Length: 195
Length: 195
DNA sequence: ACAATGTTTGTACGATCGTACGCATGGGTT
DNA sequence: AACCCATGCGTACGATCGTACAAACATTGT
Picture 1: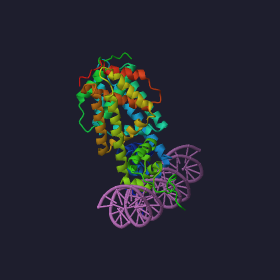
Picture 2: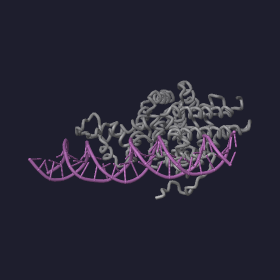
Picture 3: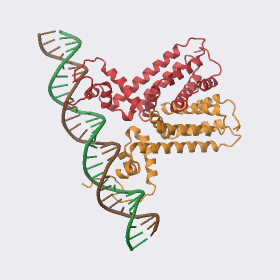
Picture 4: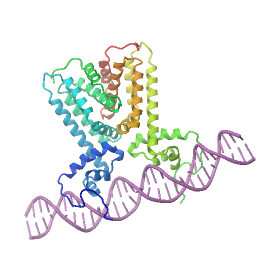
């Protein structure tokens, strides 16, 4: 009757200075696996191997937890994409690198895509989350503007989003050649670093 | 202590041959407002003004209810889009009509977009729902192939999806001119009904 | 060393959930 | 008319949820 709340910890008290940050990361794992609908304080606590009270201490409400997790997701993803774009050396084919980045995203276990769509669905109904997606989209566009003019960046951004979405939701294997052709079609000549 | 389960019905037994179909429609309303996470038997029952038992009778499980609703959504949307594409008379500018359809979708209260993203998020984790989105995407592509060659249809489909997504999640007003320009850019010459 | 302060942890409570089930009822079939 | 069974309806049960809270503890500053 000792009520096993966590498993590994054996009831031992643990000191963990940045547990809060780890809880955010674990929350994203839980969302990816169970969706926002299946994300609860208790499931996050179990996945992080901490007591329930620890989650409710760091995040006053469930909405606060979800918002924090999604914010972290957007900031991390935006920073990663910008780093990829920044790493493209002037003079090389930016279009090709963009396609490579897109395909690499797909090669992942779709975790990032699943998380993004959970965020999109939630943001479509929650103004606060809308701010997060807005900032993410703006950041992505700015990253693309490192190599493309503003109009091209905006359209290319939309095309990439659509290609990624369809690829993620398709059960058929993705043809990298078609993706490359689509991007080349939208951006005929490689625009130099005129920006 | 009469336990008010529904409000309007006043406990009166009602005869309603296609209540099942109505429940599906109401379920989509509930999903649009509260998300999959907030969709419960009881909320659907309340929104449809029927007793809880009626919902569980027509749909054995909550998953069954959600699947039925999403299937209806996909089929309805696919049929509506195909009807729009079929209505385009040969010789007219198909690109412009596609843009018009897209903008009309946006003019709606975003209900359809919200529902679609809820479906996408759920489908990214549920193989059965994936079949629904797959069929929807295939249908959309076939509709576009009424006026564009297969490769163009596929790319255009992705671009439309991305434009719609970004427009839905943006807090800034949408510029129809930019959308038109994006589509024209991807489909330079209007391809005749060569298909 | 010791108080102060922020974390950690276990537990409790009321609300809500999915689901099951038994009885009532009335339209369709014979 | 008599029956039947699909449908309508109310209620109950165990599980799980979000949240609150008080006591135990570790670290930090003095």
